[in-house]
Image 1 (cartoon, helix red, strand yellow):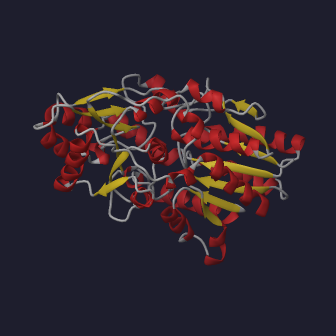
Image 2 (cartoon, helix red, strand yellow; image 1 turned 120 degrees about the vertical axis):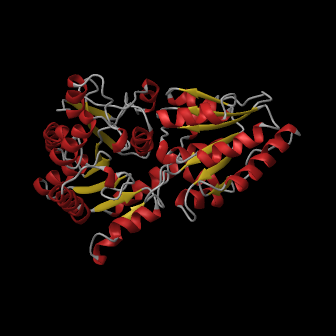
Image 3 (cartoon, one colour; image 1 turned 180 degrees about the vertical axis):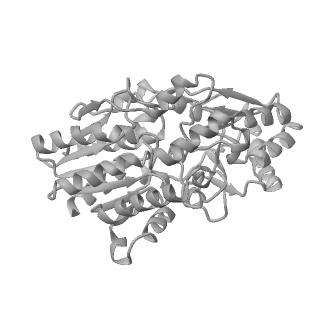
Length: 429
């Protein structure tokens, strides 16, 4: 039996798409006959943006989980400055940050490289070393963000010459859309770039979540090494859609799931909804997750009676909300995001609801939507085109026509199929 050691900061009870990738993949890899070991941070020591106890049911009973302590700078910051919001993900506009916020960002950018969770590494390395020695591990998989987790792989690869190391990079590292908003000094940025290159060069294989991200990382290393980078996208778990219910309401609900802020640039979409709502009072834009003040004020000003906001909900409950919608909104944040494929896209696809995607022309997410015949992609400010598409959907809905997506191409993105791709990669190594 092949033995896999998965090193991941995010693991239940943490919530969010980053958790789901390896909870789901380990679930199906276990069913394929692999013995999976997981090293993660103890929830009592972790800094999570959200928790979701419902994801614990997806942990296969054969998986052996080790949880460790961590030195969490985010927790220290939170305790010292209780009134200041802890920046768990993304970077807010510096012009809107307080002095304390700017100071915290500077400290995080220059003293905790590559990120503020690097304090977990020493604990993770010790736990991994013990498991590798005791269990004779074949393959180590480190998944990020946080990209500091990849440094655990660097240490283990140097110490244990016989293990194979897969670096799973779910997002860009020094090219993430908010990277230039960090307060790096030149020296700090050079150090970060050096660490990124070391990981890319020394890992035995690198997995990424989109073809464009694959090309991005390949451009950072010698061409002779680019063959070891492979795209294995995120996906959906068919088990999550068992016993979900569709809606019989006459309200046309467009749902957005996840974190949203000013960088998602939904002003054009909101204007299109506003225009349609003058003729159709039954249109509602529903946001589920975390929202910044700017977006809240935008919705209150433009469509006060045609939107609703629900805070973070357990994953199973979210699936019900998606299934009870008539259309789904996906927005790619503005910036260097051509290759961004949000994990929720695949769950959107599995609902067989029409997807309205906002993003740059030729973006990876839009290409998948087109491939699966599951909706349309527009640039962020294409108000007229968005309005025409939404108007057609609303008209068909009110005429009681079936507006669900008929294509079944999306099934290729099932988690159990993606686990087979990982298994094939492990066997090649």
